[in-house]
Image (cartoon, rainbow, N blue to C red; front, top):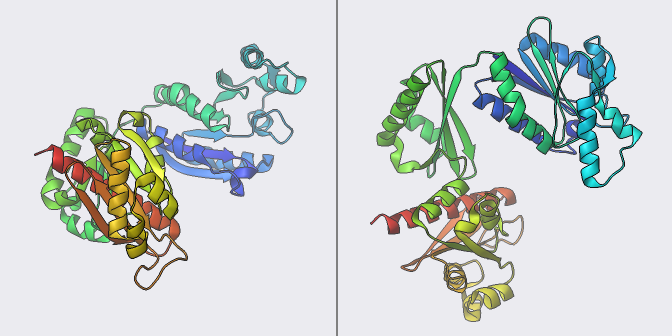
Length: 417
């Protein structure tokens, strides 16, 4: 089964709003064994909606549309779909009741313009959107294909995808099993890794596809197995991973995770350890990526963003003489930052960063991209000097991933003795 995604909205087309719906929908469809053969972003123009819808139906079995279902005049998706399917609008009582419930819960009076959202094409099946007033509509075509129109608000579209649409598509079409396996690799570049595992890759069963997904300072290998025998696919993937370790095991830092931040969370929870952070050049990114995940309170105690020297001294206990003699971007400073935050927050482990993220501020001795990372435990304090180039965002991303990787190594080393 193949599906296409059609995201509607001028704000998406001009880059004013990031199109998160496409990524989420594609991921959910893929997990369900549905091939996504195309994603399109178009503006709020009826002729474009009809033209792209025809194209999508010509190349796929299902078309999933988002956007253009609001109460204002620029929301034209519903009327365009009504015309496309040769239908007429009518007031759907289930949709109306849902809108009335939402307005009542918010203490608002239902206005005529919002009531119009309960009008849907007669030929569609309403899928109740419990989180919003825009309707979700399911259309069956004469040749057995499906068009689904979802609201553009991300949390509404995501809820409908996970609770209703994917299941309905699986029931309507026959889909394969898909098994995904992620392997996190660090310490080797993508091209070098490809050369190293070339023969292994060539020996993979035809049911398994390998993708290289480079990120800042790491590479994620994704194995995707597809077929109608789930047990066989699982065994094939397990065998492939097992045979990879003798070749590239020294670079593999984790499995079944999307990022190094997830690996840190898993590791800290596994060993029951706590963590604190002290950041300068990364500006809180180390802490933010951890606390963005649910359950961070189980292991993360807190962090200090010590962007200036005064904060390094008063909040972390870095000696004034250290900053005077060695500067803020130095081994001595990052060591004192890591140990200072660990002691002050009473954590088992601590990490610290200080550096020159750029684009300015570098010197001959400390060029842009220089980052010192520090790690402290009850047993030792470690510091490493690294250089991540001259692009600010890249420097920060790579520094964060380097901290995570070194932290995982240290925790494993000290707790697997």
